[in-house]
Image 1 (tube, rainbow, N blue to C red):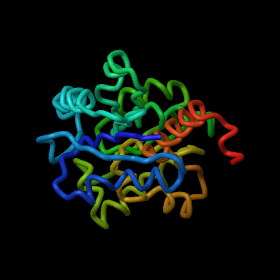
Image 2 (cartoon, rainbow, N blue to C red):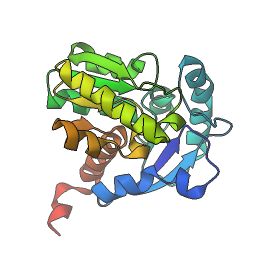
Image 3 (cartoon, rainbow, N blue to C red):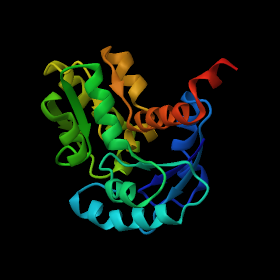
Amino acid sequence: MEIALIRVRTLDNIEAVDRHGPLIEKFFPGLRVKCYCIEDQPYGIHDARSEEIARPKVIKLAKKIEGSDAIIVSCAADPGVEELNEELPIPVIGAGKSLACISRTLGDSVGAITITDDVPDIVRRELGKHLLAWKKVEGVKTGIDLESEANFKNALNAAEELVRLGSPVIALACTGFSTIGIAPEICKKLGVPVVDPILAAGSVAYNLMLTREGWNSLKD
């Protein structure tokens, strides 16, 4: 199954653009991911204004993509996803909604880590009463900031605080956390389930593939 993945941060390096694709392909055999990024958004989405600016760019890019069976929007705010699902003939999967839906199946209470001053609207809405608490990573203004060693530790500290508050599940409410690969470190340190937004979206795409191809194909 061919998946187009849209990054909401503009990247010039092909390897950097493609970083989320191999992550999905590693865990979900049968999915082939081609990555794209929107234009003129070097700091990605990090507040309401940058989300507003990015939304029409995501929609425009998605409508240009050909030959894919589904599209993943790599952002926990799911910019343009609802609009695209109304207009395109293929499924458009938001990392934010996927994150929330999988997180709430793992526990009645969920703690979310963010880089923004609030939990993305789609994540908050889908978690509903399951959202116990959330923490913004100290020292982080954009997803780029997560890539420093100091802020990697700050993200670990935010997860630890959520566990102290009683969160049995941690939701990583920014795909920048996928980029730095922090989920396994949180699991190792704190011993709680951690839901990665890119892998959550990949899981949804994988189940779409099984629906299309048939479960019996797994027996071959």
